Length: 202
Image 1: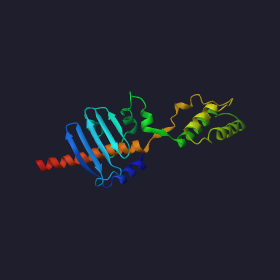
Image 2: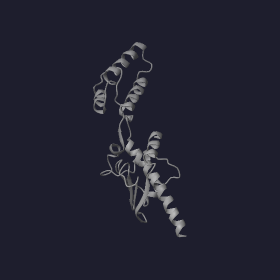
Image 3: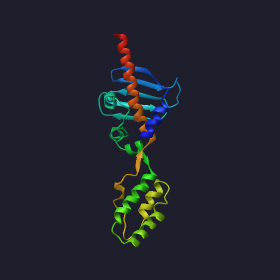
Image 4: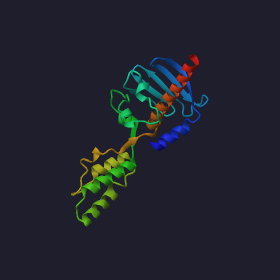
């Protein structure tokens, strides 16, 4: 996530805030670089909800009456897992499809860990044979569909993958993580702007 954070900061280096509406928990803020749509985003809130929309996608969250309170941080840090639980999608389902995507690298790591644990204690020749079968039949898969099919089709008397899917082979998408950072960063810019305004009005 550190790489996404640095990418986000680079993407919004010259962004400024426009407060288009600000009435209690009813807000509409736009962040962009001189009106450009390049990595622009909007933060829109109403009672119980926050929606981020723009160049990197659209996510709506619900948790507190004022969602700025939910996301407000002193530092640019996020809680991707917990926040994903607050994403609104249809009838409360499909959050993983919105926030996560298949990772072939993670799948292969999970396969190797599963096999290593499952064949521990077997004779060397048997372990070597199983590893070769796994490499030939499973680790040659190149995408989600072929990987799932390879697990289902794998046939071995000494190794099964019945509980393999307890491991997660998905990871949070770049777009979702970017938007999480954008929410925190945007609220920080809003707090700075309103503090300046309060200082002028006093």
